[in-house]
Image 1 (tube, rainbow, N blue to C red):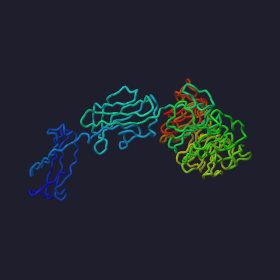
Image 2: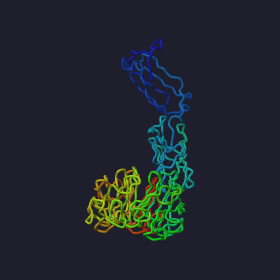
Image 3: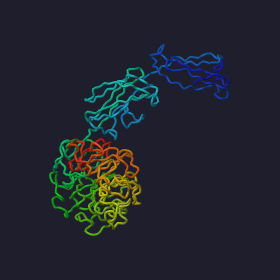
Image 4: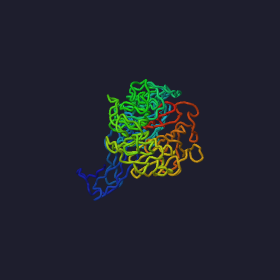
Amino acid sequence: GVTATDVYGNRNFGFNGVVRLSSNDPATSPIDNVLQTGVNGGFREFPFTPYTDSDALPGGAMTLSAQDLGASMPTYTTAGITVNGQSATQLFVRFPGETITARSTGPVVLNASDAQEIGVGFQAEVIALDAFGNLDTGASLTDVEISTDDPGDAGPFNAALASGIAAFTLTPSVEGPISVSIDAHTPMSLTMVGARSYRAYPIVLGQAGGGANGAATSATGLTLPTSVAIDESSATRRAFVADTDNHRILGWTSADALANGQAASLVIGQSDLASGGCNRGNAPGAADSNRLCEPRGLALDSQGRLWVADTLNNRILRFNDPFGTDLIADLVLGQANFTSGAANRGGSVASNTLSGPTDVEVDASGNVWVADTGNNRVLRFDAPGDTTADLVVGQTNFTSGSCNAGSTPTAGRLCGPMGLALSGTTLWVADTLNNRVLRFPTPANNTADLALGQGSLTSSDCNGAGMSVGSTTLCLPEDVTPGAGTDLYVSDSANHRVLYYNNPTVSGFPASSALGQPNLTSGSANNPALDITTLSAPADLAWWAGALFIADSANNRVVGRVP
């Protein structure tokens, strides 16, 4: 600020005039401001930003001068001011998903932005921030040196900084932390180091690598797996797979540490990791609390309890502590006890019966949602431990169970639904035999507002009437899961692909891309040949930490990929 004073050193409230503030910093321009009686009272603040380090100025210091342009008062020049370039504009690394205020100045924890595929590049940035932590849009440099400690990096390399940002590409060659060092070789820059750990993708479970797909009953093998789930309530984020044709659930202690072909550390439904019979070899009809028969759907609630759709035993089981000492189910839905397994309890459809359930989800309130596939409906159980459903979707009442209510598809009818997803209060349903995915914004109304895979809410053709694969078609979709933001993924099982939709808003909304196929018009298994990118009858999907896990059922594996 500039203050007008009289000969006695007191503030001159009556001064009127124009004052110029200037500096010996060659990168700045003079600033003129008016001091007026009764308005400024002899004092006026001036905004000023230094751009040059003191060492580069005459005398090794910066000076400010206040000049009365009316020449009625003498010019005043300050004593030397030290300007440290390192405390002014500094350089930082900004990784994907970070903001200016949440930037990397050292090691950071893994989060959703850390899912990167080995050998696939992603963009990061060098950003210039002023002393207040704001982006310095005036910073412009032609020679910012960037280097990393990734063994596959051929750097260092140079990038140009314009308007305070220099974008560059990182391509991880190994799993683990990547440290990035930056230096602009000027007094205004400060060499900073940002470090970020990355998970290695893709990951394959059930096979040693991407070129095999044989079935096996072992700690490392799978046979027609149909579901995968990650327990985010645990510190290590445990992973589970429904190994359907081995009639068991496999568990891994840490999803963070998964590697290709890794052996499971837990088995539920069998006495050991080498066994694989329905109900422990006792076939359907011999259910018990420690037995399974073709389990398909998995879900974890906020307490880390594992929910299993035990399909051929026509029930849902809950395991309270699967990685503790609890390999015996603690709750059963759909049956009167743990030793019963008949569809609809051997009788008629009711609010407490199930027939071939294939999926289960738990919402944020603890409500349990079940795809009651054989009864062509979705049920909600609204209280912990409640074994009687309070809401039905796809039928008009709890005692009906026909495909499309014995008629044709509508916005409130289902036929063989196999997959569920919850996004806030919205319910998504893979209406499998109607070859569509429905969105129910208010499930209690039993009215879908859009259908993916069909042009309307009353059609149900596999791949449309023309029987050709495209961006708007589906054939026997088995699951649906939300991704990041408004992204949505659908396992289009009979077309051997997973479709990605960017914020679908209307029926017939086209998919943006397909995993498992070279384009949106192909639909054969393992096209063009079996590898880590191809699919064969994909079933359940799980989105976790920036990666999509796919139960690639007919390839006898689970694949984790960054879409």
